[in-house]
Length: 217
Length: 197
Image 1 (spheres, one colour):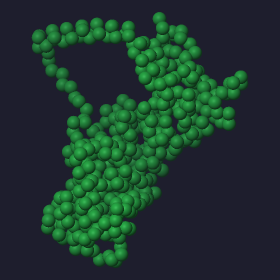
Image 2 (cartoon, rainbow over the protein chains, first blue to last red):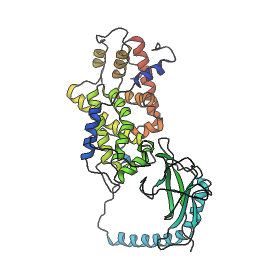
Image 3 (tube, each protein chain N blue to C red):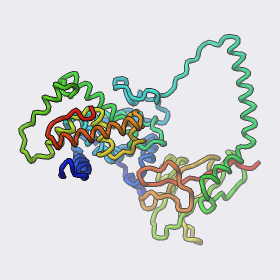
Image 4 (cartoon, rainbow over the protein chains, first blue to last red):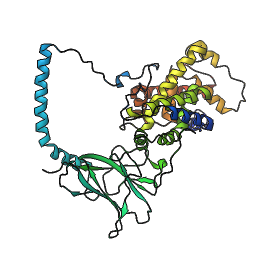
């Protein structure tokens, strides 16, 4: 290690402190056993406070808001009715411009012309659009689609090879909105090279995003 | 082993992003949590060990961190990296463990008397730089040690540190600087100083 007066001393100190502290297999096994016994988390959970009640103060302002409902007085009830009426009018007006807003968002997120493609704009009973995903991966033996629309399930949406183009393709009916997705190519997650990247990438394995606009009426 | 990864063709948990794994756990695939544990346990154990000074307390804090993270996974928001969110829990577990231990053993160095007592060199070889380094890092104020480790060992950005600690960026920069000054002094002089305290 260099001397403390040497400009490199900090790098040496940090490097020494970065030495790995190996995870003991017995500790890992015990942790995973505890996890297996714990109740399964779900998106519907309102779990205990993750930071616990016994911790030293830490940015308590980050905690979720709670709303207390108190009995309404006559004046307050009248005000609420007026506010609700205004809200209904606002929603009705906003829905007329929703399509335009979606188009603006798509433009902001970058080009999305190539893939995936909307292949049908006919409104369905469920107001879903048919979206065709395709990927050129000539040497792949298995390609699947994972995304927010299929719970990132790698076996739910396999792609098949199109004999004409040689590309891997699949078509799905998706509801209007923003959908984050990726391809799983022979087990490896990869973004769609021809679609915009999602902003919520992490850990070096990016996702792509497709925007499905509301069906034309 | 309690949780095992299913053999699913065409699917490799190891290449999925943290956010994808979280979604899979919330969708019912608890095996995906094993990948999150394997991805982050080493860094968490290292941070806790450097913070708390011993392996046993560090493993307890890390275990508690992962269990809390698992139970509260639905509250994770993807605008923050999973690692930062996990460290947010871990930092609090370490703070809590330190306070508990301080109550039990009064081991932490919070006053001049304690600092002076810590300046007595342990019986180690003069060339044992690791022991000197451990002594220096242990002698830092916990706040400074926490900031130093997050910045220079775990290599979080100041924004990530702020999110994980609840402390402002300016205050964190000051803590890191003071920690560096103090460690440099101690490694040069061989004893704790009042630099930056």
